Length: 454
Image (cartoon, rainbow, N blue to C red; front, side):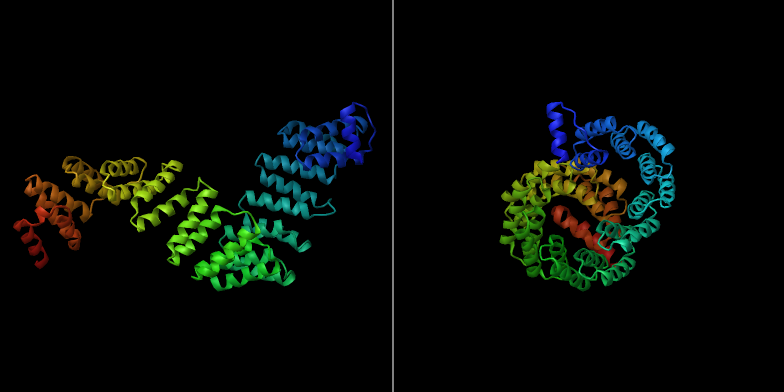
């Protein structure tokens, strides 16, 4: 009734009288639905009709804080405090401003003082808990949130915050103990059972985790989070068919998600049902075309099937989304080698190096392609660059050996052969694979045999 009357007044420019309580209700309505301009209009009209009303003035303070007008907010708070020094809302708004300025210790002091005057301390305990969280003081944060739960065991926001504190301290055992006591008080809380399962999951107690998630979905058969966690746990227990059933339940309860399609696909892949896995991965990328992981999973399956023409299509999709991911460039290089597109493979390996992927296998992959193409000069340059980082690696020494002997620099070649044999004798097959002509040289054969027998 009051809201309709107020909006009618705004449309007609007529001025109607409202009592202060009606204005409060109207303002709170607009704040709750995010219409701050209408809330400000209501505050202005309210204070014109009730200029000394504390509650309306405090709502103006709230708007000032929301808008970042802290000086104006403090000025009004000081005026209210002069009239009502023990008004609990004054303490809360002061603490809010201090918190916005990252003065969390001072905010805690103000909020603690307000506890002397507030009738219901729960909201203040929650605020104190949040300030301690900002300070990474998880013990004190947890204690304050726990007070909220003692008053209202269905205060799930505080329950989540208590568990968050335990998790940040990686104290999962204590978290489990807390949740077991909580469940004794509130045994039909699907949220608590769900959180208990997650703690057991972190400790790899998968059987216990599964029991907890089963209770959660038994209490609430529409609890999507419970089914998801239950399915993930079943995966850990290698019960892939049961995991799939639980993932599919979530698709019945809510709109499909790429995440669920991916998880179902991975389960089918582990069941060696690759065709069905591909179906679900395709559903995932259809649902979320920007999900590069989905494109990569498709790439991997087509690589396993040696269908490199399809694999190159899918890895290109992943690279279009994230062309700074070295994993994708490595896969792109691997596929192009199978397709005999060596220039593209070289480009991919060089891109890996340029974006900071300096792993030895990237250098060696690039060198091996260059050697295959007969580009010994650039191969040597890259190997020497790699050797500055990877000083004692036989894979580098054997390749240097082959290059130098091919170029009739036998002294250098045998120096590197000797070093390679000292580092890892068994890897000398590298020479046989990459430089078969060098490996067949009798002098090389004798050198290797002499080293083995020495």
